[in-house]
Image (cartoon, rainbow, N blue to C red):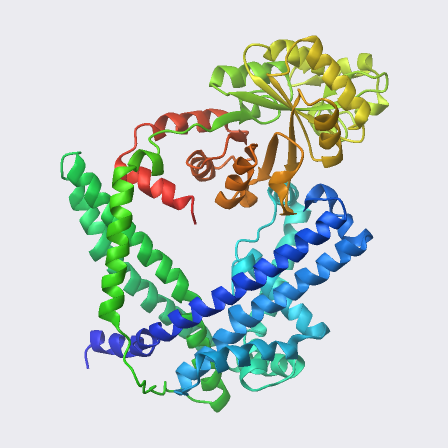
Length: 586
């Protein structure tokens, strides 16, 4: 038997399982959507009863200090259990059926997977669910649920960790500990679902399996991943990369555009299907290994005899019809779906980003010279009531002085030097930016209160810069106060995370941290007639991603890089335009 035949034999149980997996995915995703719909309705009703439309990072205490918040937390935890039941447990039941050749109805299998979650309703089970939902996606290793697969450590936290050797070391140790726990307990869900073990018994069994078979587990995983990724790579090369390469040899025109749309669309469909089948196929392999380690020798897949063969031909024809229809729509409205340039505005972080000194007049000038649309600054109040620029709680980092702005007079602050120049006042920044840039002014620190808001508005009015200034803050109550009392002012609320109808918050701009700035979030903000900002995107790939979205502004330290990317986007081919846009959707 040659190597190709061997590979085909190894893959046959997985390819034969594709119809069953597709049915499972459709039904379980539908059930999850129904649950999410019901949950969101109740969630929003609880928020309305508390006088809120959303819970944000600036209002997190609400979750622990009100009965509505506590109930929302409990519902959130319940949702994690529901997700594990449908997203993982039901698929483990499916994997068991496919590996062992059992003929069990779809309804019965899903019901079994759902009720097996009862084994996890205890303290140990809660820890398992929290690990799967919160720790695994952050580590990027292991199996997690779809609801939290894109969970991340916010940039403001990761930057603090990276800035300190001690913090980095502690974070590294924590990662190793969680990684070891995850690997040792890989088969916990298999034990509770397949063998009806308690969480503690399933954990002990899993750790025993891993200790005895860790070398084989690593080997089998590597082989499986190589087989699957190699098969997908072969399909991609034959059906996507080679055709697209040949298309580039054609002269630019209607034919090359039409072929580009067709093959990129087909490639996107294949990518979506690979994502749809990926976790279930891996769970099949995990389940085979579970049985192998349990019996002490390799467990052979049992063949399932189906009453009716899957109609691959009909499904393929239907898929081609869908793709062809989508191709024609995209061809007719190509510039609408794949814009040739970007309308995203580049905004310098802390006055000039890396173009100049932090929160300085020269930084502002440098950002303007680099082509920035606007500049984000931070203001705090001095002891004698003036407003000066500073980001941190003290001047230690930028000027070597450990005092806070509120502990100093303006005269004392002016004696400090940031990159060789005095600390500027808010008034000086207004004068310098007038007629050139939009000033996104963050009300910062302990002195960010209503007095600061009133004073800032008065200065902005004094220089007639209502259209050239946006008052922003992490404190929603402060932004709500400004928007309510000074409707002519532009306002923006910055949030690290939010739940509920965030787009309905009382402000003109919503500033989202990179990972929370999804297409859905941006669309929701625009539907409310508001503008969306993303902060702080510094990596080239991240900047390009957001420049290809419908976000309104990009706050960054790398201003020149972002402005350069804006120019580069105008020179793209049809293929690049399609790929860049599709990437923003996933």
